[in-house]
Length: 105
Image (cartoon, rainbow, N blue to C red; front, top):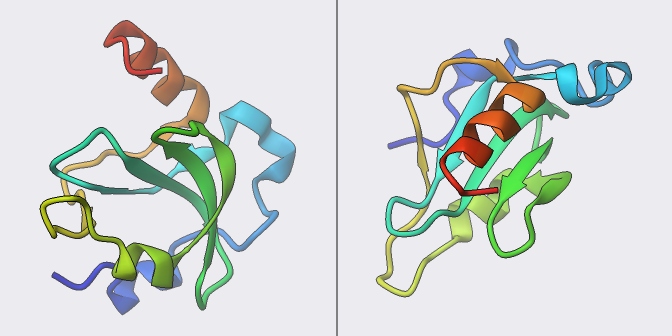
């Protein structure tokens, strides 16, 4: 599976376009490791390699991550990252609320 098909690239807000929204920024894409709770939620993209969004893992935070890092990622079982095609756009605030309800954040 291609992590980021061209159809997504132009639909994602550019870096800093949603910065003024804070936790009301919309998450458009989710990448995840099916064998752990690690997930990367995209709010913005530079159009080449750099994403900004919500990172769920050992260090849960808002921050930057790279497409190449996701492509290179391998968990202990040797599996990589996949795009969650079932993910529906939500705000960071909505995601945090959902994760808290499920004890994940």
